[in-house]
Image (cartoon, rainbow, N blue to C red; front, side, top):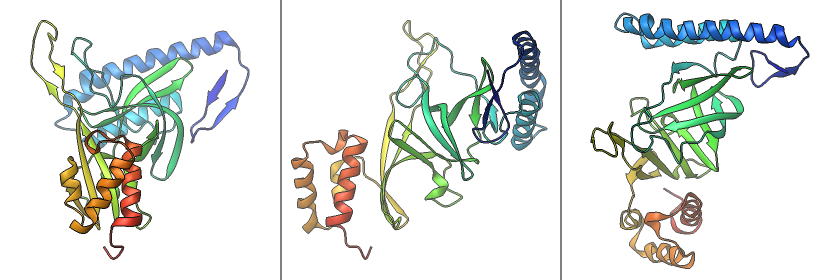
Length: 275
């Protein structure tokens, strides 16, 4: 079996007595269940007296004490998935776990299982705490810099917006090397308390998609082609229309790769580099 040491993706092989290992895991598993029950019935009931930062610190400390996993990676809250009776789901893309590289405070954690819960704006980690022992953790967004999976790159808003801006994650479609011209996309979903026979406990909305053109620290919503074209000189808009036509796609329903190509074209051949 493999032992997981505290550290960043450090795994050391070793041979151990199976009955001893099973016994240890059983004790740890029982301890973990007791820990969750304590936090649910007692710790979180005193939320008015204990700060969020304090609860996060206690949670990660206790998990780390039992399992010895990396306390930075699992820094966050326990996560409870929505009820199965709710129609649809709150996640980006699909309900399946995605293999991602997570970047936290300059450290890279490769091949982590994650979901992005758009309704809570939360990055969910399926943390491997031991052999056959996992825990769902709502990662502390103060730690997460970015995450990359399935050719999508999500970045924390603090990378491009002032500290007092809404704290969230954006998909970085394109950003120039000088960081003065780019396109970011924000995704969200909402829980709708609309009860029907098909959805007895409500449902989640379709994904709301907002495209933001980033120019010298300023942003403009460009969900429609007309809004996008208005950000450029009239004399250059024909070039953009021709590019879209020649590459045979519609701006409003363009894929991430198509938008990336469009932005690169605009940066290389359309915009005034004095911006």
